[in-house]
Length: 112
Image 1 (cartoon, rainbow, N blue to C red):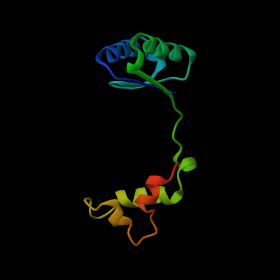
Image 2: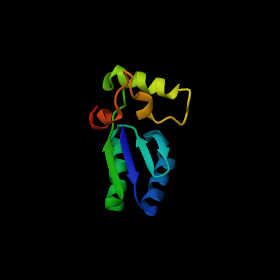
Image 3: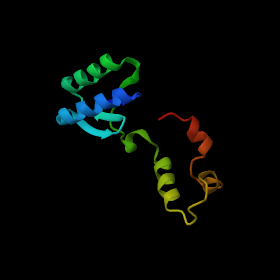
């Protein structure tokens, strides 16, 4: 997919018009951001937007996030356990302390 991010009012307006006019190219829209299908037509629309608004438009190519491929089982288990905790205000660092769950400092520095 193509992630299109706009940084000005004028660019957002043009993005909104593109999304309304070419709904088939739009996967999802979030105000100033849109995910476009990975087609030449969608790329054309994104590039046209950048031509018109220059640096106020950022285009990135994305791919779906597969948590089973990209993330260790220990991290997935920690996320599930943390969301199921008894005390909702308990910080993760305290929750993980003394357990087998990953240390938050280690996770901050570990790339996927």
